[in-house]
Image 1 (tube, helix red, strand yellow):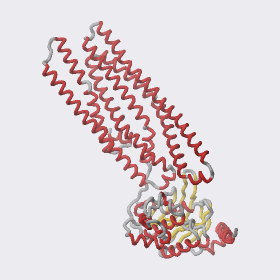
Image 2: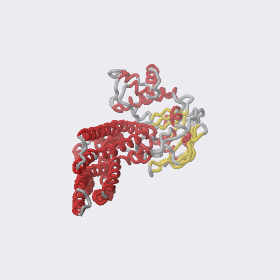
Image 3: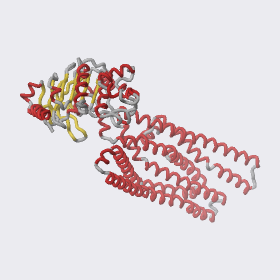
Image 4: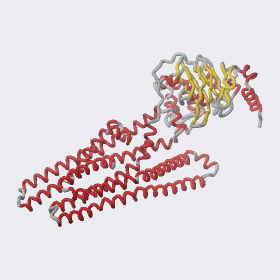
Length: 572
């Protein structure tokens, strides 16, 4: 049962155990609701048969029954609500921990708004179902089975008059299950699309206003909202109609019970007291069945949300054994990689020697940045091998690998905190002075001094208060602070002016001495003196060697050099 609940609702071990407790206490509570009716029937039977129990006995029974129900209410409330909210917290933490372990390739295939919705909205919906629907659904089912047995023991025909309509109503609801799931899933997908449109409309305000796209964006978002409203109505109808018809069948049990009971009573097959008792029981049970049906509908409603979280939880994480990396040479051996079905790397082989500078060059889209991501294991390659220290990179724990690598990509990501803390990400245990020293080497001092609070200035979401060049220099300062033996640089000068580029290059020259460096640069002059130049084209290695060798043997390299010279000579 625990494994079923864990898989069905993506619960933790403790959460599944607590849900079972809630189901058991809920079943006992549901069954205890029959206690007042049973006591009254016993009292009435004694009255009719002349064996009226004493008032003291009656009061004791009523107080005892009330006490039992109160205890069960208290236990069930704690099991159902207090514990469930704790489990919702656990679900969010576990999902966040899982996301932290996933490779970068996972995030390239999923929208950020979708992942945020999974943590916030999806788990909120599951939390509501866990506290209001799931335990009650199973506990009421168990209580119904127990009560059904008693009803059959006391009188089979009257018991069947209650049980058969109930089973028919459940069967009708279950047969409509696929329709309900299909329509609610459409609504779920549409809500995700809306969230992505909202986020895009907010993030791209500069482009929207610059190109006067306000009205077009407004119409697009409004049309999407209207479309989602129509889908929502269809989804509600897909649940409301089966639940209503199923409820109609369930309510018919009262009429069936009266009809069957009247025939039995007319033929002396049942006493008036038992007939009234079964009529009362059918009334109470029909209300409980309607509650079960609503709970079942909510469980179907969260089906898409559970599947979304399950797909995240079942995504394979990057594994590997702990290892001490000594030899930092990186060797690509017939490596292939594709983003979904788009093959970017098609059998690449080269070696970046330890302590040397290896440059990757080639036309846009040839796979240079992808190769850098594979070398850092932000992505895992599909076929071939990337070896470091004589081992396949996939067999090395990412934590040990990342300790040895500093990465500076063209697209810089910064946090909405201070300059000091953004740089300290490179080495969290670094002192303030060490952080500032790295900042000086990356030429950050000049612009930091102009900020309102210097190194304590909050720089905004993704460094929104800084220029592109300033953001890039903070990223470089991180790498300098980390002081790793392997350095990966991707177009780090793309957002820098000529003056700052020269200063950064001077800093990098001291940084890269004696380290394994793989660099991508569109400035061909800057990589002419690299120890090894790898020329890539269409996901393959076209040429490999030093500048002079490639000028003679690589048409792509020669063409890039010529175009670079033409670009440098161009005047407006």
